[in-house]
Length: 161
Image (cartoon, rainbow, N blue to C red; front, side, top):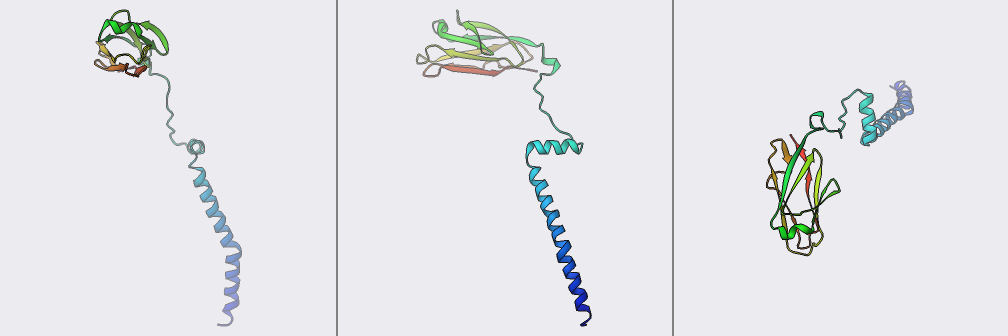
């Protein structure tokens, strides 16, 4: 048995000298690659290199909605409050109400906002009437409230089916 001890000793030295550092290097590389895979830009590059599907958010409108338009009617509670409410479509002023109703032509993605030039005045409700079957938002019956300290309101983005 005394003859096998130097052989075992050489085997342990070889294992400690070569295999442990190689195994440690492999584990370090594996951990580094996994850590880099958490970074979104690196992950996207890895997915493209491997041929995986990468979901890209489209900012363009579908072709079926590019030329769609529809009209809504905005109605105020009283004509007295109409003169100090400014209506904007995509940040461009459409003017103030001259009566208690205003018709507005909308395209997909348009945003309607309101500004009350006397926000500390009485509360004003602006109601939406929508007769277009394909217009999802702004929906008929949707209401924007101004006054009592509220200077601006929005109906959100216009959406069509």
